Amino acid sequence: MQWEFKIITSQKEKDYWNLRFREEYDGNIQPYDAQVRQMMCSYRSKYIRIENQDASVGYARIAVKERNVLSIRNCRVCSLEEMLIEKEYRHNGAAAALIAHLRDYHDLAYIHVTAERAERLKRFHEELGFGVVLPHPHDKGMAYVYNSKRLNMLLTNHRKAANDNGAAQKKFMIPMNVLKDEAA
Image 1 (cartoon, rainbow, N blue to C red):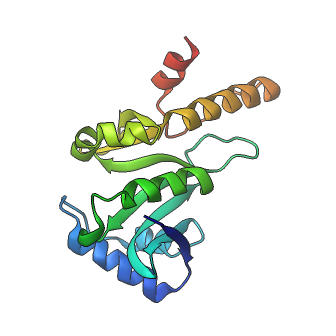
Image 2 (cartoon, rainbow, N blue to C red):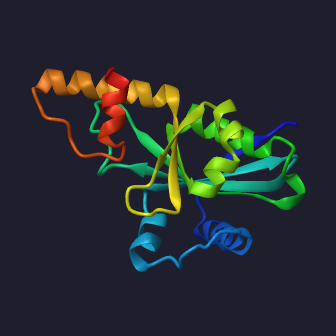
Protein backbone atom coordinates (compact mmCIF):
# COMPACT_ATOMS: atom_id res chain seq x y z
CA MET A 1 0.00 0.00 0.00
CA GLN A 2 1.02 3.56 -0.61
CA TRP A 3 1.17 5.58 2.61
CA GLU A 4 1.48 9.32 3.02
CA PHE A 5 2.53 11.13 6.19
CA LYS A 6 1.47 14.65 7.12
CA ILE A 7 2.25 16.79 10.14
CA ILE A 8 -0.93 17.86 11.92
CA THR A 9 -0.98 21.56 12.80
CA SER A 10 -4.66 22.16 13.58
CA GLN A 11 -5.47 22.02 17.30
CA LYS A 12 -8.95 20.79 16.39
CA GLU A 13 -7.48 17.78 14.57
CA LYS A 14 -5.02 17.11 17.41
CA ASP A 15 -7.94 17.10 19.85
CA TYR A 16 -9.86 14.73 17.56
CA TRP A 17 -6.99 12.21 17.47
CA ASN A 18 -6.40 12.47 21.24
CA LEU A 19 -10.08 11.67 21.79
CA ARG A 20 -9.95 8.75 19.32
CA PHE A 21 -6.86 7.39 21.10
CA ARG A 22 -8.59 7.54 24.47
CA GLU A 23 -11.70 5.86 23.05
CA GLU A 24 -9.76 2.98 21.48
CA TYR A 25 -6.98 2.42 24.01
CA ASP A 26 -7.41 -0.93 25.73
CA GLY A 27 -5.11 -0.25 28.67
CA ASN A 28 -5.67 1.58 31.91
CA ILE A 29 -5.05 5.13 30.75
CA GLN A 30 -4.98 7.95 33.28
CA PRO A 31 -6.77 11.24 32.56
CA TYR A 32 -4.48 13.93 31.15
CA ASP A 33 -3.55 16.41 33.85
CA ALA A 34 -2.98 20.11 33.13
CA GLN A 35 0.80 19.69 32.77
CA VAL A 36 0.48 16.81 30.27
CA ARG A 37 -2.21 18.68 28.33
CA GLN A 38 0.04 21.76 28.15
CA MET A 39 2.97 19.64 26.89
CA MET A 40 0.71 17.95 24.32
CA CYS A 41 -0.15 21.38 22.90
CA SER A 42 3.41 22.74 22.97
CA TYR A 43 6.23 22.66 20.46
CA ARG A 44 7.53 19.56 22.29
CA SER A 45 4.75 17.41 20.82
CA LYS A 46 4.48 16.65 17.15
CA TYR A 47 1.45 14.94 15.62
CA ILE A 48 1.82 12.97 12.39
CA ARG A 49 -1.11 11.57 10.41
CA ILE A 50 -0.83 8.53 8.14
CA GLU A 51 -3.07 8.49 5.06
CA ASN A 52 -3.92 6.10 2.27
CA GLN A 53 -5.61 7.51 -0.85
CA ASP A 54 -6.73 10.65 1.02
CA ALA A 55 -8.31 8.65 3.87
CA SER A 56 -6.95 9.21 7.37
CA VAL A 57 -5.67 5.86 8.63
CA GLY A 58 -4.28 6.93 12.00
CA TYR A 59 -1.84 9.17 13.80
CA ALA A 60 1.10 9.25 16.17
CA ARG A 61 2.15 11.79 18.76
CA ILE A 62 5.86 12.04 19.40
CA ALA A 63 7.52 14.07 22.12
CA VAL A 64 10.80 15.92 21.69
CA LYS A 65 12.79 15.17 24.83
CA GLU A 66 14.88 18.04 26.16
CA ARG A 67 15.19 17.32 29.86
CA ASN A 68 16.31 14.09 31.53
CA VAL A 69 17.69 12.85 28.23
CA LEU A 70 21.23 12.62 26.96
CA SER A 71 22.65 16.05 26.39
CA ILE A 72 24.28 15.62 23.02
CA ARG A 73 25.38 18.05 20.37
CA ASN A 74 23.41 18.05 17.11
CA CYS A 75 21.19 15.22 18.22
CA ARG A 76 17.47 15.21 18.95
CA VAL A 77 15.68 12.44 20.80
CA CYS A 78 11.99 11.81 20.27
CA SER A 79 9.71 9.25 21.86
CA LEU A 80 6.50 7.74 20.55
CA GLU A 81 3.88 8.59 23.17
CA GLU A 82 0.63 7.75 21.39
CA MET A 83 -0.31 5.93 18.21
CA LEU A 84 -3.64 4.85 16.80
CA ILE A 85 -4.41 3.01 13.59
CA GLU A 86 -8.13 2.84 12.80
CA LYS A 87 -9.51 -0.70 13.08
CA GLU A 88 -10.21 -1.16 9.37
CA TYR A 89 -6.54 -0.42 8.57
CA ARG A 90 -4.88 -2.61 11.20
CA HIS A 91 -2.77 -5.64 10.23
CA ASN A 92 -1.91 -4.31 6.78
CA GLY A 93 1.40 -2.55 7.46
CA ALA A 94 0.14 0.89 8.50
CA ALA A 95 1.60 0.75 12.03
CA ALA A 96 4.96 -0.52 10.78
CA ALA A 97 5.04 2.16 8.07
CA LEU A 98 4.24 4.90 10.58
CA ILE A 99 6.88 3.78 13.09
CA ALA A 100 9.49 3.42 10.31
CA HIS A 101 8.65 6.93 9.09
CA LEU A 102 9.02 8.33 12.61
CA ARG A 103 12.32 6.48 13.07
CA ASP A 104 13.73 7.63 9.73
CA TYR A 105 12.43 11.22 9.54
CA HIS A 106 11.57 12.36 13.08
CA ASP A 107 14.46 11.13 15.29
CA LEU A 108 12.39 8.42 17.00
CA ALA A 109 14.67 6.82 19.61
CA TYR A 110 12.19 4.91 21.74
CA ILE A 111 8.58 3.90 22.20
CA HIS A 112 6.76 4.49 25.48
CA VAL A 113 4.36 1.56 25.83
CA THR A 114 2.70 -0.66 28.42
CA ALA A 115 4.96 -3.48 29.60
CA GLU A 116 2.35 -5.99 28.39
CA ARG A 117 2.38 -4.54 24.87
CA ALA A 118 6.17 -4.40 24.84
CA GLU A 119 6.21 -8.14 25.50
CA ARG A 120 3.35 -8.97 23.11
CA LEU A 121 4.79 -6.87 20.26
CA LYS A 122 8.44 -7.84 20.81
CA ARG A 123 8.97 -9.36 17.34
CA PHE A 124 7.14 -6.49 15.62
CA HIS A 125 9.34 -3.92 17.40
CA GLU A 126 12.53 -5.89 16.68
CA GLU A 127 11.73 -5.97 12.95
CA LEU A 128 11.64 -2.16 13.04
CA GLY A 129 14.95 -1.94 14.94
CA PHE A 130 13.48 -1.44 18.42
CA GLY A 131 14.91 -4.37 20.32
CA VAL A 132 16.01 -3.06 23.72
CA VAL A 133 13.14 -3.18 26.25
CA LEU A 134 13.66 -1.52 29.63
CA PRO A 135 11.16 -0.98 32.43
CA HIS A 136 9.92 2.52 33.14
CA PRO A 137 11.79 3.73 36.26
CA HIS A 138 8.66 5.07 38.01
CA ASP A 139 5.69 3.20 36.51
CA LYS A 140 5.82 -0.58 36.81
CA GLY A 141 3.15 -1.06 34.14
CA MET A 142 5.10 0.83 31.48
CA ALA A 143 8.26 0.19 29.46
CA TYR A 144 10.58 1.88 26.99
CA VAL A 145 11.41 0.06 23.76
CA TYR A 146 14.62 1.55 22.35
CA ASN A 147 15.87 1.66 18.78
CA SER A 148 19.11 -0.32 19.08
CA LYS A 149 21.03 1.63 16.41
CA ARG A 150 19.90 4.98 17.76
CA LEU A 151 20.76 3.91 21.30
CA ASN A 152 24.31 2.93 20.26
CA MET A 153 24.73 6.27 18.45
CA LEU A 154 23.47 8.18 21.50
CA LEU A 155 25.81 6.31 23.82
CA THR A 156 28.79 6.88 21.52
CA ASN A 157 28.03 10.61 21.23
CA HIS A 158 27.45 10.88 24.98
CA ARG A 159 30.81 9.27 25.76
CA LYS A 160 32.54 11.56 23.27
CA ALA A 161 30.88 14.66 24.76
CA ALA A 162 31.75 13.53 28.29
CA ASN A 163 35.37 12.92 27.27
CA ASP A 164 35.59 16.25 25.41
CA ASN A 165 34.18 18.19 28.36
CA GLY A 166 35.67 16.10 31.13
CA ALA A 167 32.10 16.07 32.45
CA ALA A 168 30.40 13.42 34.52
CA GLN A 169 27.56 11.49 32.96
CA LYS A 170 24.35 13.47 33.19
CA LYS A 171 20.99 12.19 34.33
CA PHE A 172 18.88 10.89 31.47
CA MET A 173 16.17 8.36 30.71
CA ILE A 174 18.45 5.47 29.71
CA PRO A 175 19.36 3.69 32.96
CA MET A 176 23.03 3.71 33.91
CA ASN A 177 23.28 -0.10 33.81
CA VAL A 178 22.66 0.09 30.05
CA LEU A 179 25.69 2.34 29.69
CA LYS A 180 27.80 -0.17 31.60
CA ASP A 181 26.50 -3.07 29.50
CA GLU A 182 27.16 -1.18 26.27
CA ALA A 183 30.69 -0.25 27.35
CA ALA A 184 31.63 -3.87 27.97
